Amino acid sequence: MNTRLRELREDHDLTQVQCAKIAHISKNSYIRYENDERMIPLDTAIVFAKYYHVSLDYLAKLSDTSKATTTLNKML
Image (cartoon, rainbow, N blue to C red; front, side, top):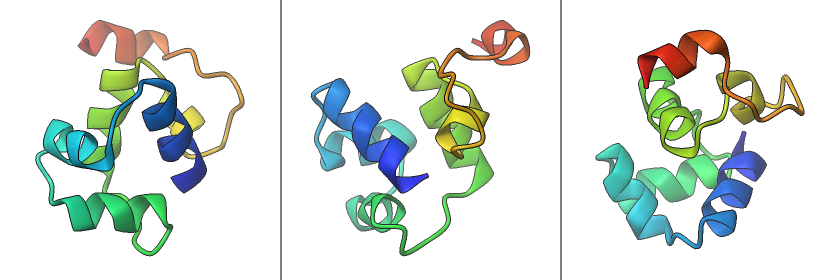
């Protein structure tokens, strides 16, 4: 998941600090998620999926399609 988080962050011209603020987590926690030192909790992954308008499957590298699912779109 770390590669996708980093790619999405960079594609949106965000810093790690900004991403941490988006998810209401510490900068160090976010860095650990990006560096694959810690598994990202589901609730935090959902925050980023909503923010970037991608599916959880895409974040978890279960799919190469970034399109958010119908269910997630309804939640937005």
